[in-house]
Image (cartoon, rainbow, N blue to C red):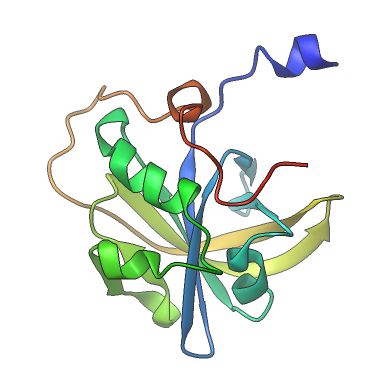
Length: 161
C-alpha cells in the first residue's frame, strides 16, 4: 500500500473553522470534490488538531487554496498547533459568510456549510455545500498550487501517528 500512497501528491489547502468566538485552522492534504450535482466537497480533519475541535461545533468551514509562493502560510497553519499558538495573530483574515474566517493571502477560497460529518478513523470528513467563494489578488492562471511534496519540509504541529 505504501508504494501506491507514496506516489500521490495532492493539492494542499488550509481549512479554517469558527465557532463560539473561537477560530482554528490547519493545513490539509486530504480534500476533494465529492459530488457534481449537488456540488459537494469533503475535507478530512485530523482528530488531534485544534481545528477538529472547533469544527465539531461549527456550521461552516472555509477552504483555501495556496500557491507554492504561499509556503509561509502553509508553514504557519501546518507547523504550529492551535493548542499553543494564535495563528490568526500572524495572518491577515476577514470574516465572511456565516462568520467563516477567510485568509486574505490565499489565492482562492470558498466557504461551505457542513452538510454531514463522516468518521474516517483518525480523521473526520466534513462534507461541505459551497455557499460563497472568492480569490485574492491577481494570481496568474497556471501558477502551481502547493502540493504535498512542497509541504514535506513542514514539521507538523501535531505528530502524525
